[in-house]
Image (tube, rainbow, N blue to C red; front, side, top):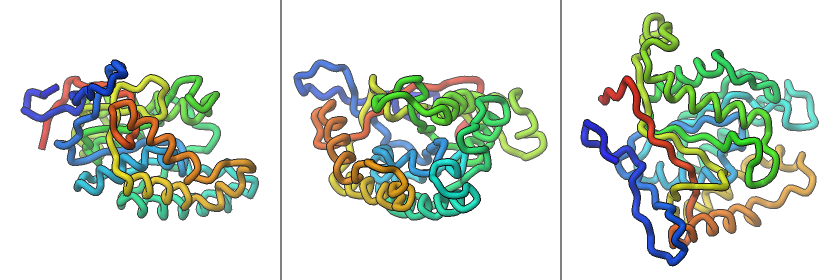
Length: 267
């Protein structure tokens, strides 16, 4: 769909006649300049979404990561040790996919609260980055891999609310009045790791390779998870399965929501 300013909002795409009749579209992101990924923990973007991130950054799109916690409760070690360790591994993962802008907030891992404080923090970052698209993970109770984690649910729901809050001058007025951050509402909101995608971002083999390497950067975290499969064993098949939805070799599947509210100002 095209906005009043003539820009494609990213919800249009090409339905590929692959015989499946599934109605899933190839996502058209060619006009995007900036993307903000909002997730709960280090490593969350590395379970497939990072392949799309690599495709975007290769094309010159600026991608920023906002992590709401440091993931300090995700290992058997003392959280005071784990937080910095996981931040270091996340920085390495970002380098694999061309992400230079990483912000990690200090909300408590495992105790992420969906509320005004979290929404304000995300809205603040949206106004700072001014992205065309905001990306998060599924916030349903059940995810394709099983029961969804509490922080993931809180992060996703807060992110989609904040994406609209950020465009409304009268919500979190202090962001503009005290911090000088003018309203900004993204064009689209993407939810990854869903069981009912509407769109797929087609990616190339080099993006798949980058995604595998990005998850491998979380070496010490993965070593703390007995029985966790090697990234190379499950990331490529997952991306191949998503690509097949649009008749492509590889892809990243998303559920895409068009946003549009009181502020659609553009630079």
